[in-house]
Image (cartoon, rainbow, N blue to C red; front, side, top):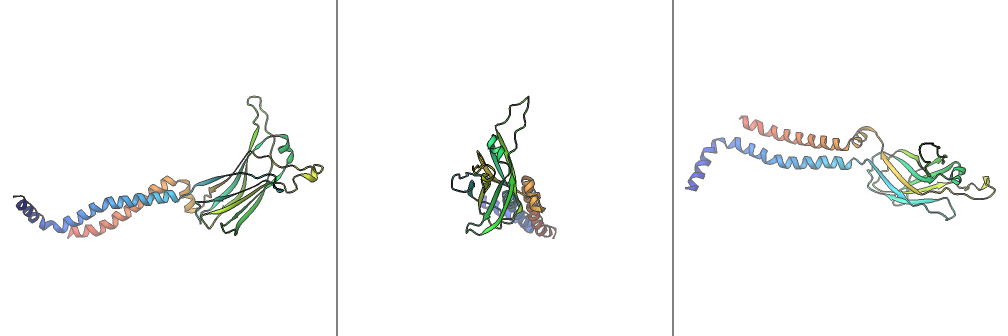
Length: 232
């Protein structure tokens, strides 16, 4: 009885086979298209690298200005970055009296081939006195070092040096001084430029739009193949 019902059902649907098969195929492909659309959106969101930050541990007493070295990874090779150094320094008389000092940054490949280098000045200004709030004992210095830097590789080695090469000795009767730093970190922010800059500025929206575009494109292609068959 069951087999007879199945045969009867197939015989009934046979005239509509050419319409049912394309529709069933299209329905079965929708979950697959949705899955790949989600992956496409996630990939765009993930690749929209916004910023990075690496702590630096300055080395003192090695016969040179305080320095630190680190390896920056997970870079987008053709992405433009604005690179800066952040310093947390005590707002004491020694740092303020030091005056201008230099910050140098050298970026190189992991095989020690120099990609870019920059030197920028900085100084520690005395804190502003306020009758309402207590005076901060530290100052946060942000020193821009590079603009629109393109690494060309996914990992670079960064060498940072902070201070004066003369250590202020000629201006202080031969006594040497070094800047005192509590914390240091190297930052990179995606430079807002072109399509990549727009994506990096709105990564979530860019991921959603990319997923929707992929979904609409795939469903349109499938529809152009299915609809003519249904109309015949």
